[in-house]
Length: 125
Image (cartoon, rainbow, N blue to C red):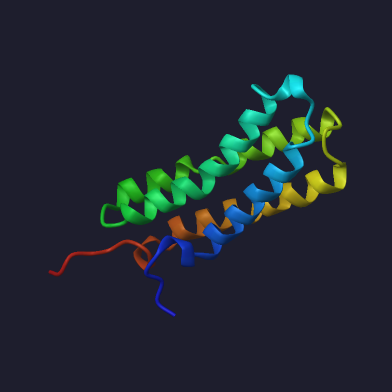
């Protein structure tokens, strides 16, 4: 199947599902975290799918496409997940599962960059 839209990418789909899981879990964070950890983890997790979408729109320009994939904040989200677990806002088992999802996302983004010719649009020669 030819991929025409960013929402058809497996990595995009996984990132949206993971972000929604974080959103649901973060609803239970303490009120004093509203403008710190809650905000950080939600924003970084949402950034992943946002940067994938932006990169997809810029794939005519290899450097811009790669830059957007690199700006996806999957590793940052893993850090906030770790803090949420250490602060006991989420169960360790949930944190481990989410961390693995973001490892999968990072791996898929790296694979896209390693096989860049498959993804970028090339002009006619």
